[in-house]
Image 1 (spheres, one colour):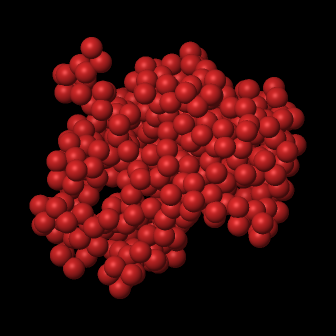
Image 2 (cartoon, one colour):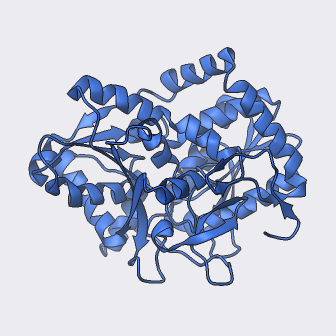
Image 3 (cartoon, one colour):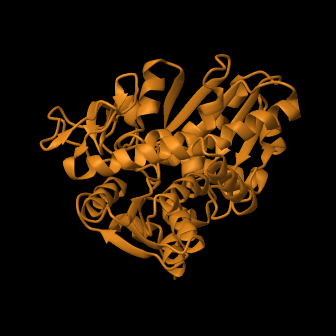
Length: 402
């Protein structure tokens, strides 16, 4: 355990994973957040405002779309796409941000801070800060600001101050470090809107709950469309927020396979990967006990992915627990496979999906032909791919920035 950090006995766990491993300066504030959440998650007025914003601002419920062209082309299971890319701001991130920002508002906070990788969480946080008339500052690795220039501009257009983080590898993990450091320095008026199902308790629980709307909807939608549950639910996994939301309401349905698709980068067996569950080991980082890519001394390894949103050396504690229980399966998808899937779904279904989501699409391409035609896959499209067009074009040797 890191020096000057301890775990509170009140924090909740997923098996051996989770908890609170945090500096003393944040302990009391995290306890206040946990207490506030325990109260408001059962408060009728809070829930009414949350559902109203999800439906009338974020554009929920999102579509469960039958991918007829993909289904016929792949020749196996029926494929449905959960269209989180159609949400306001273009990704699943808005679900969680609305919930956490509402909590911040009820706690009397006036300033939101957040980390972001691909930028969609930053955009969602900046958007809700405007709606609630709150100040907003976003921390983003300098490397990610270069490959996600469109989202940086969107955040700034919305009035957020974007801080390029130049420490470490200048990617998502470093943005989390910077945001946590900022929070320790200014807790009185500030709320850290955590973007993924990671970090110290209560963040993994809050993100699970706010993102569970994805599987709550998809379960109802697939029963209406097919009269039965899916055989498989597939989603990409970095920290794991869209995946835990996609899995949440199926976890107790043991006949539904849950598959998380991690970023294998240049390959699971290379040193340029972010396939945490396949390659990682148990450790403590960013306030939680979970699985991380680290060396034998417990130092966090550098990770790599073409996807800024999956370029993270750990995974949320609930995912680590689901993997340990073998309730969910986690597979690595390489850059090449994800880019091919980016192009494939565009040409077959006319959907430009986020490169993060295309890790899940790539797995569907592999597995659907091996399944029966009476079987069903739900694949979550966590976001839209406008932000990735320039980098994918560059990957293919085309420069569209000129």
